[in-house]
Amino acid sequence: MKYNNALWGTMVLTILLCSCGGKEEATTKVLRPVKFQEVGFLGGEKVRTFSGTAQTDKIINLSFRSSGIIVVFDMKLGQKVKKRQLLARLDNVASRLSYEQAVTTLNSAASQMNTAKLSLNRVRALYEKGSSSLSDFEAAKNSFKTAEESYESAKRGVDIQAEQIQYGYIYAPEEGTIASISAEVDENVQAGQAVAVLNSGTDMEISLGIPESVINRVSPDMDVEVTFSALTDETFKGKVTEVAPAVDANTATYPVRVVVTNPSDAIKSGMAANVTFDFGDQEVNNNVLVVPANAVGEDSDGRFVFLVEDNGEVATVKKHSITVGDLSAEGFEVTKGLSAGQKIAVAGLQTLLDGQEVKLQ
Image 1 (cartoon, helix red, strand yellow):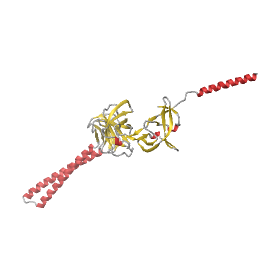
Image 2: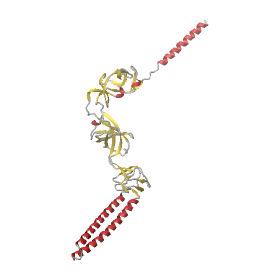
Image 3: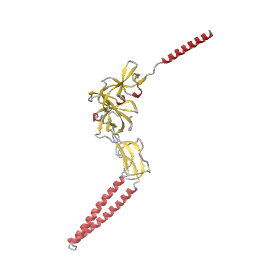
Image 4: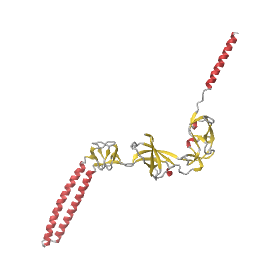
C-alpha cells in the first residue's frame, strides 16, 4: 500500500513538472526585425544624397615671393583682415643688400653718362670749329650712347631690386578671415611656401563628388537641399554652380560645386555637408524592374530574394528565385520573377530562413 502511494506521488510530481515545462515553451516568441523595400522601376530612385565639405568660394594661400626669416607675423586664427593690410614681413637682408648695390651701380652709371655728355659737347664744339676730326666726334657720340644705355639699365635694375624687397612682405589681397596658420615668427621659409590661408569669399560653397552613374542627371543651376551634421534640424537651399566634365583620378568621381543660397554665420568652412538632389523630373524606365544589390542572394539554385508577405503585425519571408540582368547604380535589373510593388527584404539575407516570421521596420 505504501508502495502504491509512493508511486502515485511520483506520477503527480512528473505531471506537474511537465506542465511547468509547457508553460516555458509558451513564452512570447522574439521576432527578428527586417528592413524591406518595394520593387520599383529603373530610374525611379528620385532622391539621392551625397556628402561634401563646406568652404568659402574664394580661398587664398598666403606666401612670400622670396625666402628668408619671418620678423613680423601679424596673423591669428579667425582674425578678420582688410585689403592691403600688412600681415607678415621677412628680414630681407639679401634683397636690401642687392638694392643698395643696384643704387650704387646707378650712381656710377649716372656719373659716367654725365662725363660722356660733357666730352661729347666739347668734341662737338671743336669739330664745328674744324679743330677735331669726324672720327673723334663719332667716337664721342658712341661713348655717350653707351653710357646712356648703361644708365637706363641701372635704373631698371634699381626698380627690380626695389620690387624684390616687396617680395618679402605679405599684404592681404582681399578682405577676409584667416582660416589657418602654418608658420611663426623667426621661422625660415622658402619662396612660395604657404604660411596661412585666407578665406575671402562672400558665398559658402559645398565641394562634393558625384559618381558617373548619375553625373549626367546633374546640371548647372539645379536646385538642391543642403544639411550639415553640426547644424541639426536646419535645412539650407543650394544651387549647382559647377559640374566637372572629367573624373577626378583620386576619388573616381566628378567634382561638383554647390553654392548655399541662404547662408548662415553658423556655417563654417570645413563642415561636413549632405547635399540632396531630387531627380523627380527625370525619365523613369517603366519596362525595367530594379532591386538593390544587397537584396539579392545566390546559392546553388541561382539568384534569389526574400519576398515579404505582410500579415499585419507579423510578416513572413519566403525565398523566391529570380533572374537578373545588368548591374546598374540602382541595383540589379530583374528580367524574370518579380513584379512592381512586391516587398522584398533588403538586409540580413544570410540570417533569414524560408518561411521565417519577422517584424517589419
